Image (cartoon, rainbow, N blue to C red; front, top):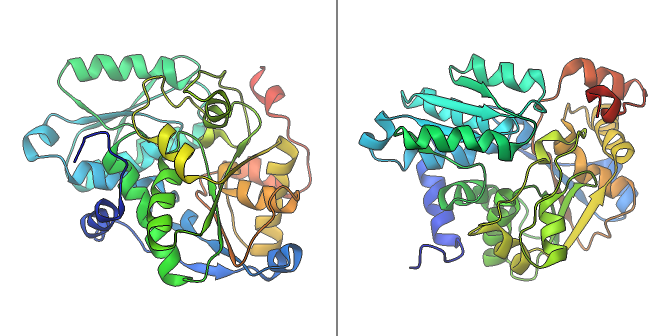
Length: 333
């Protein structure tokens, strides 16, 4: 098999065997309120209830566990908007591996604190993931191993285990609505889901402010976008101009791409709390946001992924209380 071949079902099934002891199988629950709104059965995949409160643990665990002991002994390093770093820090701690996470100044403090609490070293570099990546590259030259957040076979296969779980729990699913940033999550889920059910519809959702994968797909090639403050901060960052896997997999497997604005993201967070009794971060809420805004036309039973719950609770309180939160003013952008 070519090293650049798309990730397939066999790799995703192997990833599940690898990570079973390190992750939690999360529930898939019906949403009466969203089902009524959509006119079709709507289910919520509660991945924000994962051990690190984000899907990122799946890919990070698969990547770390697939390293040989000699490589692992030299330590792992990654760049992150928060949730990949948390997953990588957890996987490293569980395997006794040194871990350094490099992040930009745009990463919320609660996510930095969460990563540090898991024992990882933190480096804050610049105002974008691309700038933070320079420090990662330097550490790799010193002998550490980079575990990237999305464009990596083991990462994509690990995230794809969500697709296995969803279709095992709901074989009749017609539409999957999945967050889209660098593309590791949606590529893995789409690869698993379309292998199991070729006619299933995959909808990718991102924010209007700085959606790199959406811009790249529109351009027909990976492009750079400015990383901007947003309530969906975990969806920020580029896809890499030398992208190997996820650009092509999104192009080939994703049926539709939808973007939501900041008010719509806030509405998703608000709905998640008051109508679903769930605390989700902005990136975790964008599927609900898109459905509530009428930007998705579901076909058949529909699954929305709640991908993460690592939100600053003071910010969450403001949003669920109905306050309009302008992230550009929050950061001085």
